[in-house]
Image 1 (tube, helix red, strand yellow):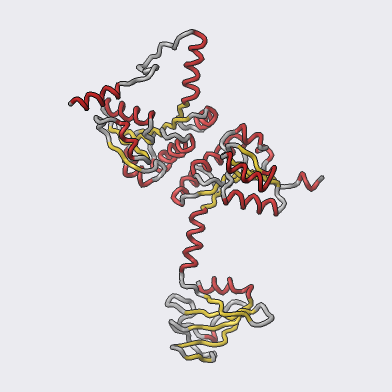
Image 2 (image 1 turned 30 degrees about the vertical axis):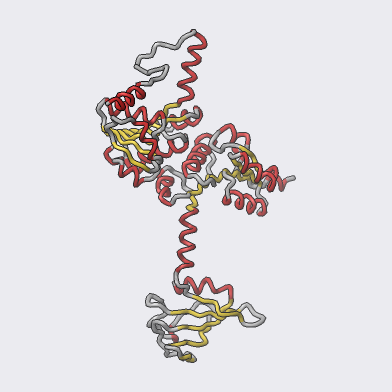
Length: 224
Length: 160
């Protein structure tokens, strides 16, 4: 019983892909969740999947939000695909019910500054975030996974040195590599070398290294 | 006065036409180019196709030198966002949001936004009618029963 009353209560407005997956993820994390969807046919689809967690209604309407229990909600997330709707959902929740924790999804990155100026301090720019991630993928990857050492979590990775790489011009002896990174070979103009301490890295060198999986992201950050 | 009207369906087009006739510099914005036909053949203002939430479209329509913006789209939330956007981002002195929902209209009015609510205005008049058997005398030429002068204007154009 005590456990039940301590649950964090989150109201998510908008049952599109983001609202739906957010609801599922919060349910799995033991939140008390209410997912509000305006459109009747979307509501029925969501209801068949998630059941009582879903409510049909317009999150801009204070009476609807009251029925949803906004007064005891710890968190309101405006997750619709329409920025004007998200803005008004946040403003109404804030001004009618003084809900402090209100998070807005922003679909058009251009609207970020207006939301900020209007005092919506917690924003997730979904389109911008996705564009950033895709942009990262499209860059020539700094670290390419070649394979794993058998029965281990140690990766063999290839690092291609571009002009702006922090490795270029550096001496292997002085190099402060991330934890547990071991350089095993350097391919230069098609020839493999066993690296020695005095080696100075050059553009277009392909560095082959061993690294435990868990440090791979650190290596990427180091090379970025 | 430099006036921008966003939304060119019935309300927006009528307001645009009449404000231009009375000598204002009017720019009308709508996503649908065909909606500008509602302004009639004699409209002297300018039209801009695009979303009223798009800052580039608003800039093209001259928002930086606008004295007042009327947000007249079909969506209450869009009108509320447009009115706040032009005031905050472009420092337009006055912006009015036309709204259907009385609750939102009053709430945003409390927050300092100029709002006009179609529902409360119309219902107020109808309530008066129910009590008194007729509509009240209104101080302005509000064309309470409608206006089809637009139709005659188009007919005249055809005769020419």
